Image (cartoon, rainbow, N blue to C red; front, top):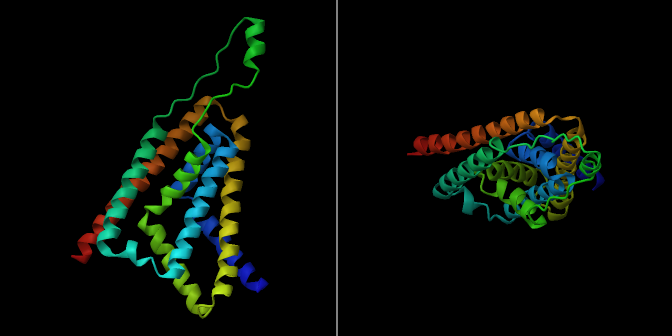
Length: 224
């Protein structure tokens, strides 16, 4: 069975390398820069839970609920709108410039870490979870993968569990590494560079959102 786990890891590595730079990637990096590695890790865990749910539902056959044409259309529109909103918020996010002061005591105080109370931890898990769950292309992708692997392994539940455990673990680790890399590089980024990244990340999310909406409308026209 170990070879199946290893094969699943290879699939996860492929997904992380060639398909790991979508909306979730922008959200991970942006969260890591602005909220820290812990918050980005919670976001990555939410994405992991979403992928896990999709694999389980695919294996159970419940995927027909979201792949039915009418549901597919509205899931796609909803996902596109959500991504556009995320993108606009990210694009317009302002980065505070550090304030200089001539007062030595103020300088000492400025050296102290400023604790800013952010959203509760469950918010980041929910954001990661729902970012993908309304995206029909993610569902369709997992349907294709699960169906193909299930056919190859003869529907053996134990073998499938072993295989996809390797896949999902690698995807989770890769997301954590992306978040950690962004967090580590944060100290080398100037406010202007972070502001530029916000605009790039926001634009990327907006483009993904419009692409998703356009794609589902195009698919709907073709099927009518």
